[in-house]
Image 1 (cartoon, rainbow, N blue to C red):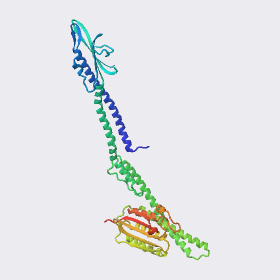
Image 2: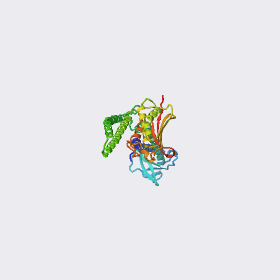
Image 3: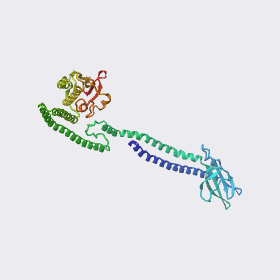
Image 4: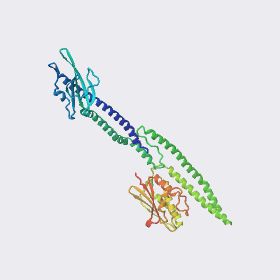
Length: 454
């Protein structure tokens, strides 16, 4: 599983910080342990010296009185057990005889660990020289105590430091994702700018306001867009040039075929062949014109600041196609509202309307009805072409806007009409939808575009 960039950045930050927290926690524990040991040893030595100060000669014999203050030093809420032992050579002067002496005798104070009655204790052995009538007697005072107060001191010294570092680590783990989310917003915005672009929107992206780390990415994308723009322009120009170059020879060929068709032919097969050639030539001419129109629609600028009267465009197209409708006995009508203006290219809007109405006339049965409606709805202009023909099945509507797709093959056509309509509508910031007519009969093509704003 591939982790997200946010998760990887968080790991790169949290893992070294967690290792640092563990290392500092171990160092802090060692330091706290050393400090507690020093404090405990100082108390043990102080107690042993206090006991040693009260040892004296009485009538030629050593006498040891343990003052209460020597043991009260160890008072704490942890109820440590304190043991002591006073010995002069092999003579026990007082205390617990089971308290172990250090392995090696020394004139200096000796600290060591031992056990007594199953308890781990810390012990100090302090030796004092006593003089009497020229006689020297070394006396050893041994004081030991259990480790409860020392362990508590270690916890008090180490745990707050460790908890602070854990809290810091938790805050980093919580705040870093939030900070990354805020700081990665420009990257998300850049991603959305790329995702939300139309397929033919090949304008360079803006780098203003982006962190300098993201600007090389934007520059690389803009270089790719520039190359794509050049390639697309060349491709469109080639299609337009090819379509334009094909129009002249096709027109000449159609003229020659019409002339040959007007001549009397006794051979019926020749006449049928000429008629077939004429239909094929006409189809090629129509497709060439549609390809040229599609190339013009794709190459047109995204924003045209020209005010166009959509109702006037519809009326003009109806005048051009009324003869074709009359030839098939189709009732061609219009419902045009006044002051329906859009921002766009009048020639391309004319092509849009012409394709819609021409398709409706072609696919509606003889004697049918075709109506063009143009109205304003809110801040948009709506164009509808309604017919009572066979319509388009619901399952085929998803493919109706594909280039060269034809739902019916018994009617002459190129399969580019609705593709051109959608391309022109999108160029004008609009959209095209297909629906069924009244009583689920016929087809309703609806084009919605933003209205003109002065």
